[in-house]
Image (cartoon, rainbow, N blue to C red; front, side):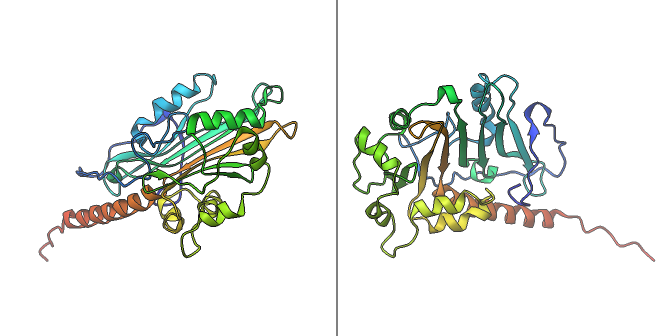
Length: 288
């Protein structure tokens, strides 16, 4: 997927890729990240520190409460080698009579850059008779992720830069947070999220990134333009009543890791290709 733009998801239980190609020694480099230590937001246990090779147990632990739903994985070989790695993992549960449906996706870099997750999303639906209030949802999100950078346009925004959660001097009480959620984002907050040249608001970058193919090469341009190193957002959509939550969409993007991993991976792929060419036998011309 991450090189050709194509992704084939396979059930985890059926993944069996033949070992072909020549032995190649990868020397992984850990990419830079927007998050570290206690400042490591996650979505049901998945964070930008999660490696693709270790993501399956996290998915499976969550899915134990959804009988019959299996995680799917996408894998590919590293260049022309026999090194196989996870590029993405997801699950999708369509709406049923007993469940409104939900899905989750995590996308990973190559093993050259430690096979780390750089984009994670989760879409969670709520049954009509079990829809929390918006106030309850705000409380739950704040309890897990802390006070947000900003609230507005139906979203709670957490932006990170320089190893810290960005502040635009917006303080919320439960009442004002609910009021802000139902209103456009504060113009002063939006301006404060730009850099001194007025570019790169992560509010705008989030909206640009979401419809793009989630490959490093497709995201790196937006990642470089963003005036933050990473983000975590929760979009809260109205339910059966205006004050209820019909669905919530969680998005975690590590812009800093996207830029760093894309550079590491590109150099590693180029080095592997060059080494492959150097190892190609020239053969002997027959006597005529």
